[in-house]
Image (cartoon, rainbow over all chains, first blue to last red; front, top):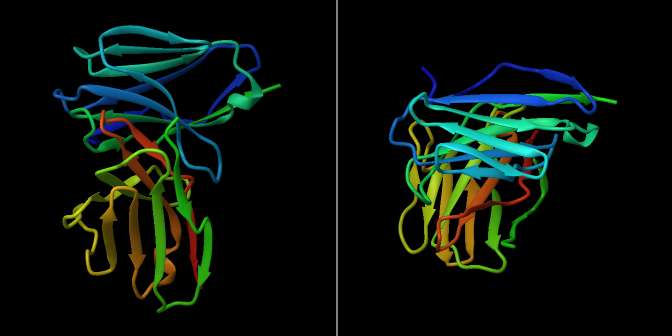
Length: 111
Length: 114
């Protein structure tokens, strides 16, 4: 079993729709969870971090964490074509330690 | 915000030559930097953890004699790919950790070995 698994893509949604990205992890002691966005040919950029169970909202983005189910998700509301990218889920055991990445989900938002 | 730079952004070299990639934290000190490699359509794979003033810690399967890491100051880590071969062609990305545990990625270096 992979340490971090993301829902297989590619995912395609129309402009204005909600895009839902999912991630599960295997290490129960993981403490910190991140969503990165990576445009083609660029390095990842951090868009959300979440540390506690529940929802965390930042603009059009909402991260959801359920440690009991070892599940973290990212919702993108009012999706825009500029949101088209690969989204990487990353898990961290302790603050500042190595990040373990999922394989990413490619999202395409169609105008 | 915290900024990490990498140099060069792109390099093309002949097989058998060595290539050095620099990673700098521009506005903060980083006792720890991480080096990743990303092949096309794959995720980031951690190669090694670079600690200032000590030897790097390499992930399983990564040859330490081929990928030389030096972290001589709190703002600079270098990765040298020795005797590069075409299979080493990849996107190399570093990240730097600040003193509160945040990690910030550099823009990456695309290496092409002919």
